[in-house]
Length: 403
Image (cartoon, rainbow, N blue to C red; front, side):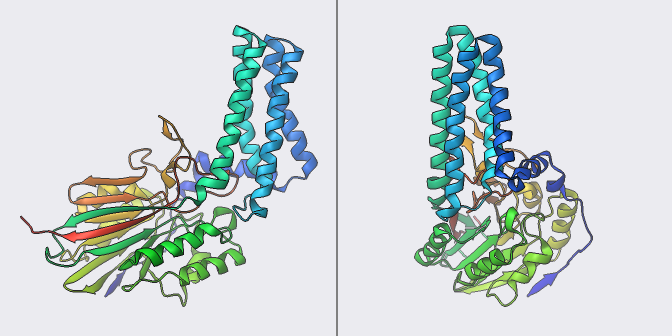
């Protein structure tokens, strides 16, 4: 049985109005520039990097420091141009280079202080070491880590499942962000075949933001989803509105063996006395709207079986706890996608900040699992993962006695 309460009234597009999105759009502009303009842009950054060296030390030091940055800028360019040719990722090299030029320039400028304090050799040497480390991190983050797909396995218990019932194996997939199919998506299908879950649950962001209106991307997403099968079905919800454009993504599910839940719930009978109640909602990131939708939807949802809430982002965890939902599955944060040692994620794209970044959280009877997801951000965001490898989650749900 499926109950639907679709609300088509437009709501505020929070992500599009965010500073992060505006910066991603601004730095995407170089994607359309001729090569000559990109070269002039990079020379401008090199000039900015040279200025404090010139003022604090001398012209020779400025030349050496900016030469180091120039060499690594060329190396970055080679990497970004190579990625689509190797079918690893498909972002515009000009935009990704523009983004990476900012931290490289700031680092070069900063080490002028070391040169001023300890001598030009120390300053240039430290700048070279940091620029080299950044390049090694780029190679790892762009070519290696995005393809190290991990399977996170965890066991959870609920008194809404009979204690003597066989456990339920739930495979959670999120944030595919397909540009073009790569060996990463092949690994996803291999993992499905190996784990043999009872049911597959997907929590949105099927396409990359740069390819969300691309017909070839849409066809490849359909091909991928069609190959995802489980004995008790595949269920899905939509992701962020700027990514999963409703008019583009909803039709992709037509004719697929995937049930799209939109402000709706359904009870799934898995046999042997096992049932799941799946509650699925569109994610708008407009929290007042989504909180109200969840509260309204839960008034009709039965609590005689484990309730699994599918929603793209972790931002409704407080409301899920109030409703006594057993399991809340989401993604959206990518685990930060880029994490620094001892610091953690630079950004999470969540309005709750770092409160729910990745992994398992428990509050009351509610278990929240925030997956790092599969794919990568689009527009000008460098197609990299660092200390946040792609992930699928296999959750085994066990019954327990009420005592």
